[in-house]
Length: 55
Image 1 (cartoon, helix red, strand yellow):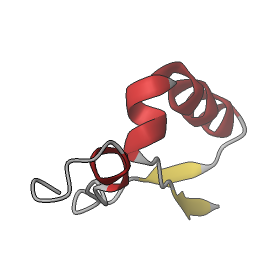
Image 2: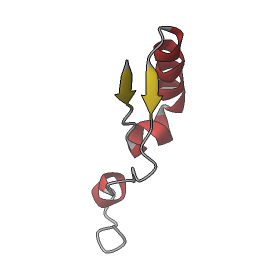
Image 3: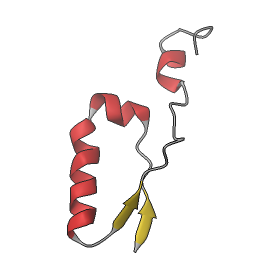
Image 4: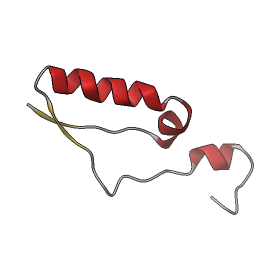
């Protein structure tokens, strides 16, 4: 089985170990992970922090 893994920038910044654990667990069960290299931050964290122009 092949799945695309979408890790949000917020998860990556605050709880990176959760994404790492999820990838290890899926790999243990033979799931092939694809992580899109074009995946980027949507800007929501900075926008919600008041950096509207920068976002």
